[in-house]
Image: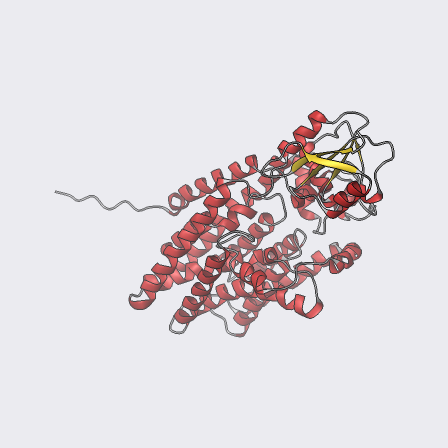
Length: 484
C-alpha cells in the first residue's frame, strides 16, 4: 500500500488568498470613500497645465482661490507621480481611477517583499510577512489613497528585492539602485529617508561583506543610490522656490503622541484608535529583534532590516529638531519595508529554535495580527474621512442663480470642486473679504461647527445661519439676513 506524498504549497498559492483579500478591501475603499483634501490636490495637479504639473506654483493664485479656478494648485510633492497618472489616465481621470495608481503598487509591494523574504529567509518568514502586510491598517489606508505613497513604496520594495537577486553583479546593482532612488525621489521627497537608510546598510556591507555581496557590489549600489538621488535633485532644482515654501509651512509640534504614532504606523494609522497598542507592539518587536540579534548566525540581515525600519523614522525627526522642518507621522511611511522585513527575520530565527524566543515571538505575532485586524476592520466599517457627497448634492440641488456659496475651512476649496465635479448655480464668495452687498442667501459647506471667519462675518452683519443637511461628514448651512 503506497502512501501519497504530502502536497507542497507553492509560494504563489501562499500569497494569492491574502493578496485577493487585500485587493478586494482596497477596491472597496476606493469606491466608497469621498475625495478628501490631499487627494483633491492630486486631481487638480494632474488636470493642470504641464507647467503647473511640474512646478505647481508657477502661476500661483495669491490668497484664497476660486474652487474651480484651474490655476489654484496646492501641492508640494515632486512631479513624476502626477505625470505618470496624466500620461496613462489622461487629464481628468477622476478619483476612483487615480486611486488605482496606489492600489496596484500596494499589492505589488506585497509580492516583491514576500519574494525577497522567501529567497533570503525562507518560507516561514515569507508567510509571516504576507499575513501581516495583508492585514496592516497602514497598507490598507495608504494603499488606496490617491497620493504619492504606495507607488514609491513599491519602487523601494522592488529595489530591495532586486538588490538581493543581483547582489553579486555590480553593474546591475548600480542600475537597480540608480533608477530606484531617482524615480522614487521624483515621486515623494520623503523616500530620501529610505535612500539614506539603505546607503548606511551598503556602507556596512562594503566595510564587512556579508550575505553574498562583495565590496565591489556594495560600493556600486551605494554609488547608484547617490547618483540616482542627485539626478532627482537636479531634475527638480527649478522647484527650489517650492522647497522654500515647504520650509515655511507650519506643522504640528513634535510631541510624544506624534512620535508614538510614527513608530506604530505599520500596525495603526495616524489618528486611529489603536495607536497606543501599535506603539507598544512595535517596541515589543524591537526588543525581540534586539535579543535575537545577539546569538543569531543571520545577524547581518537582521541588522539591515532594523536599519531600514528605524532610520527612516529617526532621520526626519532629527532634521525637524535641527532645522525646524515640518514633520508628521506619515513622513515615516517608507519605514514599512524595514518593519515587515524585521518581522520576517524574527520568524526565520524562531522557526529554528525553541525556548523563550519562540514563545515570545508567537505571543507578539498573535497580538500584532489582532491589532492589525481590528484596525483594518475599523477602516472598512465606516468612512475614515468626512463624507462630502450629501452636502455637495444638496447644494447642487438647492442653490439658485443669484445665491452665493462658500467653503469652510477655505483650504478645502479644491476638495469641494473635485467632489462636485461641476460648479453650482450660485456664485463663489470668500467671506473673509466680507459679504457681497447684493447677496440675499449664502450656502456654506462646512463642519458641524463653522469656523470663526464665517461665524464672525455673518453675525457681525446681522445674518443668521442654520443647518440644512447635517450628516456624519460635511454639513450644508443656509445663511439669510435677519431682516427677512
